[in-house]
Length: 313
Length: 293
Image (cartoon, rainbow over all chains, first blue to last red):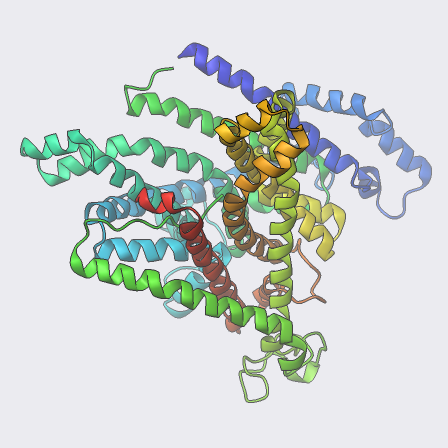
């Protein structure tokens, strides 16, 4: 187990290195000059040169890259060119809306998608199955922001159940928090529900034909126990895998959802930083996202052994 | 990433559900084909059937409700929404087809090389792993923000994140195909390497690539809309479904149809491509269908 974990951690290093080099060179070769952004339009060439020296931009590129990665390893992600705030502080300020959104969306997804997938596989070819199949194709085809605006139109403009936009932290009370989080989370989960319901259905279909399911039924277990205790647990590995590979989908969903609902989260921070060419923030955020991506997929691989004792590392 | 649902063999199902499913399976591709044909026709004929200039602003006609003159009403600059959606079809189809073709053309040779040469494989796959670890949408926004909002930049920005998946697909097909007896026979007969790749390995990748291509096209159209929507897409002088919706955001409370109409057309178009993709897969790869998953 430990050997496996260290092997996987070592394998993550080249991946992250490729990401770092890629992001670094993408920004350096794009032609924009960070010093010009900081100095503004009125700066003299001397001021520009001073800022460039201060940022280390006058150094050769390999030296700049080495300095940057060295700072990263000590936890120093740099300072925003626009707000002059340390990037770590910026990320800390924007973490809560994004985490709330993602967590509530995952809870909604699991609560809706897994039972639907199980039901569709259980009554394979039945009405629920047909509806689930049609709904998953729809879920993949309707863009997240269209779902968001349709939900706003129905629940905020027509029914007036929820505010249209904005975010209230959970410290202001549970209902204000939920009323600003439920619609965005539903929006974000739309594509995830489709993905996971489909995978649950397919995985359950495979498992339901296994001998041990027949044995469980033959010894008189209730159908609910057979489905959820025996079948679902064995069907869980592919479902978890999809949750991991769906993380990229989640990122794009978070970015779009935060824009639709005007949530001050990490997705909005990333888009704003990119549009404003705030290099340190862009570099840090893309690298962190990739790190989280690698970490989530490692955690999921490790959880296989917990779910299925036959799997050993 | 094949996002469209996998169809099942529908074996051992109850009578009514089965017939419903069969009916849906028979009708859906036809409907999808009709919708897609309409979109393609609308895109080709846009200059002749659009009732108004999609770009000309007319301050007198701001945010008009639907009328005989403006079928879907007008936007905040007095431009005809229907005409803008018609011209937007051109952009979306160019992006969908362009990205699919570019990603396949770049990914195919890379995948064949990776599948055939160990050292190339090691380096190339680490590069692809790194590229895949960057969320595609962030990469695309960054490329557009840094490269400018022309349609060429947008095409490049959407193509790059799609390449690793094509390379992986081609590589896996090549890895299994090169063990086939006819390839081993070709190697034993002293056939030149380029000829083996060109004549024996490449054709076996065509069926999976065509299937993957349809899904890439659908996802590219979606990504273009997302980019435009976030303000990192094609400039609004070239209407696209995404930037029509992006402009409608400010007036959503006042006039939801500015977002809902292009959203509906966009969703229908992607839905149709996904359904047709599934159909093509069933035709080209009958094993998938039998697996019932």
